[in-house]
Image 1 (tube, helix red, strand yellow):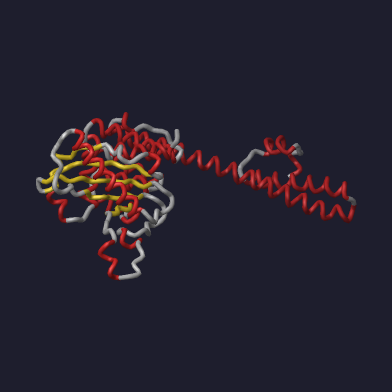
Image 2: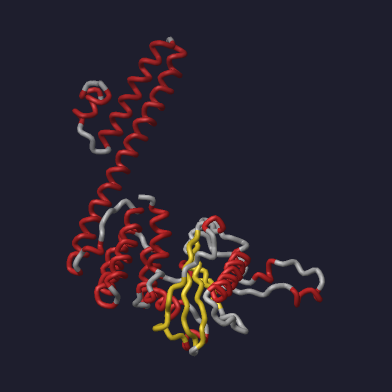
Length: 329
């Protein structure tokens, strides 16, 4: 499974549900006009006006809705890039311009009346990268104005930023909706996920459509898969979630311990062999190269054997691996 692509597609799929868009705006957008949005009018619009070659590692969704009974659009760009795009305001302004051109072409194609004014588009950037977002929010800040009289001729375009890491886990827990749970799941460690996912399943089973339940469950599966766990919670009953996750976490921790132990053992063997051989060769220069190397190898094996013994490996097994006697260490 390509987990990066799975995650990218998962985001777009989730925000293709009106419930997710509604939760995002209600909880994370602090603008006065949001009180006048009629969420029952939300309708998805295809974003084919932006070619795939023009995009970076990002995905977008476009929704039509009414604000105070007037047509408007929400353009949501989800950025998965590991680095901050300094020119994001230019990118979003370009996308908005392309949409307006597309809108006019469609009206001409359908022989509809061309409006005197274009509908407003509210651009949102949803960013979940590791680095703090540092790009400017208005394109005017990207343009060098050497002469004040030129200011009135430069474009003025803002976008609204929602950055996952701006919100504490406690504040996200207080918001009982799926978008806050999405952020929490991404920000939490494996041992924190049991309570969060169990609570998320309760919300899914009671408050949303079957389609969103399925898609959110698949998205969570993708997140867990990246952590080395494969479990499909969309097929689980509410009562099955915690036992299944606890069992999965136990296996996950044992696997991590096993890998860590193996890695430590291998490093110990290498270090012991290296130190022993180095010491042996050093003495071998004085007493004879051949004899010294042999002693160095023997000493290296003994030191490696002692480290293996302290790591919990049976003496008999150590003797077999290193080809030495059980009474030599």
